[in-house]
Each structure stands twice: as C-alpha cells, then as structure tokens.
Amino acid sequence: MKIVVDINHPAHVHALKNFVWEMEKRGHEMLITASKKEMTFELLENYDFDYVNLGSYGNNLLQKLVNIPILDLKMYKEVRGFKPEVFVGLGSIRAAHTSFLLHKKCILLEDTEHSTEQIKLYLPFADAVLTPGCFRGNLGKKQVRYNGYHELAYLHPNYFTPDPEILKELGLKEDSVFSVLRFVSWGASHDVGHHGIQNKIEFVKELEKYGRVLITSEGRLDEVLEQYRIKVSPEKLHHLLYYASLYVGDGGTTAVESAILGTPSIYVSTLVGTMGNFIELEEKYGLLLNYSDSNKAIEKAIELIQSPNIKECWKEKREMLLRDKVDVTSFIVRFVEDYLTN
Image (cartoon, rainbow, N blue to C red):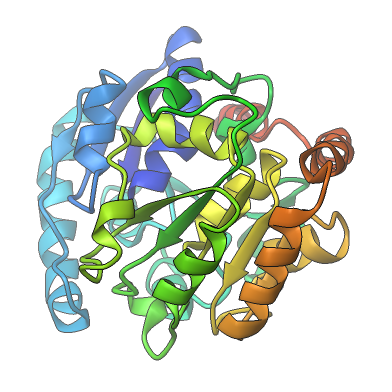
C-alpha cells in the first residue's frame, strides 16, 4: 500500500511518527509531505524522516487563505507520481483536496472542535474523520470515534519511556522542583479573537519562589522573561514535561501532553470549555485544570506547587487513564489497513 502522510504542525510529527514506522515495518510505502510551521522540519530531520517541503501557509489569516490553493497544487504535483492509495493527516485541508482530485481515499484525525473553518474546508472531501470519543462535535456519517486522545499516539507507554538525560542538560535532578511554562503565538485561524495568559511576568515571579521556572515560547518574550527561556530539542520536551513538578500555559497540546504524562497541568485560555478532551481530562480524571481567568490560575498553580506528594497523586490518576484508553497508534494502523481492504 502507498500512503501519503501530511504534516502541518510539529505536533503532527509526534502524533504520526509511530504510525509511519509501524506501517513501514508492515511493508507499506510511505511519502511524507510537510509545510513549514515552527520546528516542524527540524523535528522531521531529528527523526531521520525524508519529506517533501511544500512551503508555508504564511503568518496571518489572509496569507493562509490565499495559500490554500497554492499548497493544494504543490501537493498535487508532488504526490501524483507516487500514485498513493490513501492520504493520512491531522485536519489536513490539502490532503483532503488532493486525495479528491486523485480519486483516492483520505483519512484524517481531528480533536479541535473550534476549528470550524478548517473542518468545513476538508470534510466534504475526506472519507473518514477519526475523533476522540469525548469530541463534542458531530461531523456526520464520516466521523469515527475512538477511546483515546491524539497525544496517546506517542505518549502511551508502548512508545514513550522517560529519559532523565534532559534534566542533566538543564542542571536539574529527578527530585528537583521546577515548573514549565508554555506560551503560544495565537496565530492559527481558529485562535482568532482568543487569548491565553495575560500576566506572564506575575506567573513567573510567583512560581520561582518555589523552584526553577522554565519557559518555552512560540514567539518573542518580554525582556524580563527572556532569561527563563530554554532551548530544548522538540523531541526531548516530553521527557522534561514528565519530570516537571507543574505545567502552566496557553499551549493546549502541551497541556494535554503534561496531563497524560502524570504532571499537574493548568491550561489558561478563553477557549476553555470548547474542547472535549480538556473537559474529560479535568472532570473524569482530574489530570488537567482549565481556567479562562489568569488570576485564578495563578492561585491554583501556587497551591499545587506547594502540595506534598502531588506528583504521586497525579501518577495514580494517569494509571487510571491508561487503563481506560487504547493504544491510538495501533488503532490508526488497524483502521487504515482495514479501510482499504474491506
């Protein structure tokens, strides 16, 4: 089977890397296409993936709208000679459009309910859309629900083993108390009109009273905060999150990753309440705490960082989650193979 895997964000590399490796083991021929977004290309290269560079959608909404047909055409030209049988991606508009033009199947994953514009642009052209069971939207007869989250495609224990080496690089130990803060750029089309942490400096100053504060950020930081920024290879960040005492941020994917890894996680965003996986992780498992109010989030962060045995408590919650959920990579592998053979 010939499969095109389309990547449009660093998180997509993580979500689909084990799928690519497993399908190659099974004798399938893979072609990876990718567009430039933050550290996407660096991450693909770090994993030794060959890929086709499709360029960039741009940095603002107008550029992205203009570039949709341009990247569609680029992808079409790059993959038609490969003669794929199926396209796989995460909410990929261009994969859906190109597969339709080539009269081939397209299987997409989706977990972001408020990505309404993207969903409208790809749904008519996709054949199946795989969503977590807790997804709060109804995508019609093409929707297939599974009992898991995208992040379990790479953070399930079948694939992820924490490595403390990253701690040595940063002068930390496994029992060190430290917080990881993540700030995003809010440049995606589904982020328009929303915001995250408003009082970043106050967050840092309060949390550093209890241990080191490490910041990862998509964009520029205030001069006061630049000294806290860390430069960690993107494939190593999950190991750091595993050992962290606390995660706080407006980076949604990183918030879910931290929660799944058993680290107390606080998500701060005006998008709180719109996404099923965030709601389930809070209400059913107690692994993730969601706030739209930055001041309330600070109060909770200070409470958690001071709580004794907090990590042990979160690890127990994580074990309950892992007992409930499926190995998502195995699910995707089976679904793609069965879809084309049935």
